[in-house]
Image 1 (cartoon, rainbow, N blue to C red):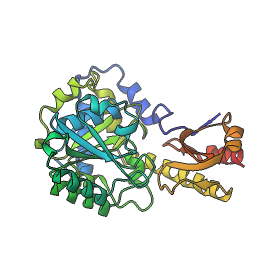
Image 2 (cartoon, rainbow, N blue to C red):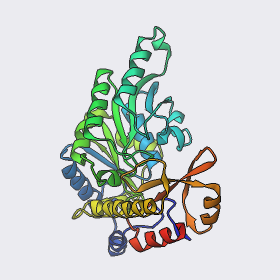
Image 3 (cartoon, helix red, strand yellow):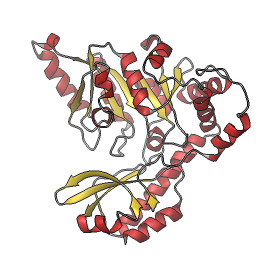
Image 4 (cartoon, helix red, strand yellow):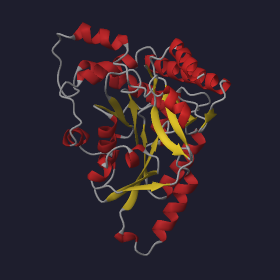
Length: 341
């Protein structure tokens, strides 16, 4: 079966595996205080043009979201996101388990607009019973979104402006950050994200690493006791160098961007091929996630031949997601297109 279910189905890039073999019998300091983590932190700070940024390596996306949000806001404060946001749909209430109410607003193809956010904040803060509510303190967005769409600089600056107006923190879930940064037309880079956000993370799990995410907090004073917070949430790797080695490798000679580019290029190749075959697209995505609409008959004919992600029902049809990865080859896309004929 051809697997296009997700973008983290392969183990890790060979350079990472080679590095693990090379250092296998070294004795490294624990909890991220090793030479490889230190080197990775320096490389990421340089990419972000943020020499004092806090950079911490965590085990996975849900843990990173939970740690970052809980560290950035008070226990009684709430988080605002698009209704399709990962924390609102696919994290089993992890954020709410910390005591932070998740307030889901209508989005546009996965994006939360500044207009929607401003309208909500004006309404809720004008309510005479505001003090009785879980008060919004942080805005969560994904880059790219769960629908493969990408925020522009202008959109992010507009969100930042609203956040500033209402004293909200801005946090970006970057599980697939590389794929967003390398998408055609993207005018955002890591240095810009470091300027416009209070925190974001660079996803490794989905972009060539075996596991791990790099949480970046550009201004260290924005959080207290971050190491303790990570430990408290069960997100601390004792063998911290396992993540450090991977990010040190990914940010050596632009490997992270090269791997992300491969996923985007093969996704565009897939998109063009599916369009030539006449498939209906649910939306236009410039990233590695492509969403097509299938009839029940077509879905039945291919379900045992290809791996895909169910997305949603659309009347009597079904929206599925096909995802390329850092390791996808065009020959694999050709095989998929042949099956989809």
